Image (cartoon, rainbow, N blue to C red; front, side, top):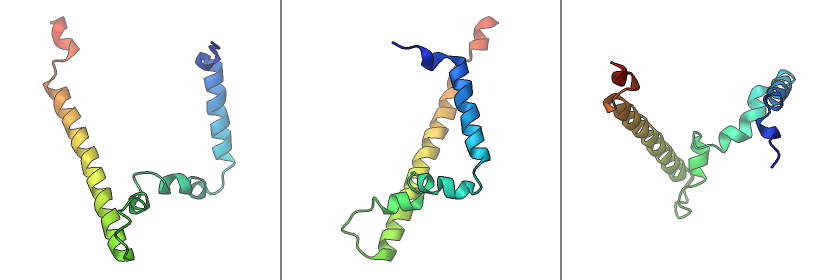
Length: 97
């Protein structure tokens, strides 16, 4: 198997290329618009996934917004759970004492 993907020079070249590309981008928002709209952070993403039986435009928007809020709350709960587990877990520094 080719191990060039682990080559630090290849990684550095990729980073340089990405930064040069962004340096040539006049409208950064336009460049990322499609990706932002297609991400779960976008309400439009959730509106597109609303049950097709909901046909009214206003009803679809409200259902999409509710789905978006539920998604964000799930993320917040997962984050809080992780922080709680980390607080309860003994730190590796405790063993050194």
